[in-house]
Amino acid sequence: MVWANSAPGGVDVTVQTGAGEQALSGWCTYTSTVQGNPIGKPAPALGVPFYISPDGPHVARLWFPSYPTGSTWNVTVSCPNGVASTQTVW
Image (cartoon, rainbow, N blue to C red; front, side):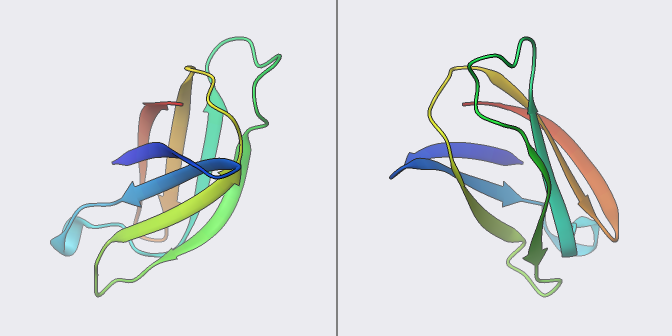
């Protein structure tokens, strides 16, 4: 699960990968690209590394300089033990 909230000067993104044996963990990457026409939208986030502890909690927070556009973003989180894709509006 991924969600975004306004933060000073940007967007605060929370990545939660579940619990137990099915939770994604380790050194992961975050990729987010806007659906549709990218003109006038913030730049995509491509392969941004972050860490999620295998011992929990399985949550990470990332911050990006941005502004709200109301656009749908395709998000992919890739970890050594799996990949999760979702969409979020920001």
